Each structure stands twice: as structure tokens, then as C-alpha cells.
Length: 123
Image 1 (cartoon, one colour):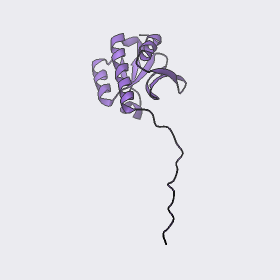
Image 2: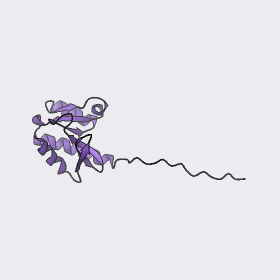
Image 3: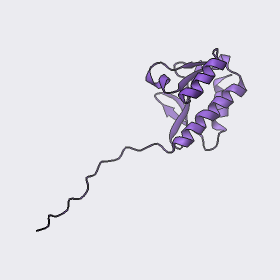
Image 4: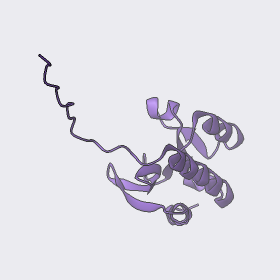
């Protein structure tokens, strides 16, 4: 698989768009990142799976998938070694990551915190 193939499959998913995230391409649906390219290097991509989904891919395709280091990996962020993954397996993992993002809904936007209006004391 190539980066171009990864991009083609990711962008074929409904409402998927490509933007940038920490200096490398990412793929989003509803403002949620479901995959990235070029992390940690140009030989890899990343898909956002659930921890359970991640374990399945690690078990069934150990040569192509590995958890991202640290807390992100513990939460399901999964590296994809492009040279080791076939198109069907990559498509399945990207679809799962896309479905996970859709299920989580639109990303929360930072908003200014407002305080509730105070009530005048009754006399």
C-alpha cells in the first residue's frame, strides 16, 4: 500500500475530508480525526480504533498494525505500516475508524464559559 492508496480509500468514505494535524495529513468526518498519514514517518499511517478493535488487528495482522506509543495507543490509536498492509485490510480498518468517528459525533468546540445570571434576592 502507498500513501496515495491510503488517501484514496480514506477520502472515499462518506463526508471524509483531508486537513492537516500536527504537520501531517489527517482525515476527518464531522470534525473528528479518524486517520492520519505520515506519523511517525512517511512509511506509516494511523487509524483511530477502539481498544477492542485494535487488539483484533494486532492479533490478526501483527506485521501491519501496532499501537501508537503511550496513552493514545492504549485508547486505540493504531499505526499502520503501509508496506505491510493490503488494500482490503486497510479499507476495513479505515471504515471502522470512520464509523467510530461518526458514532462519537461532531467534535466539541472550545467555548467561552458563561455564568448563569444571578437572581435578585427577594425581600
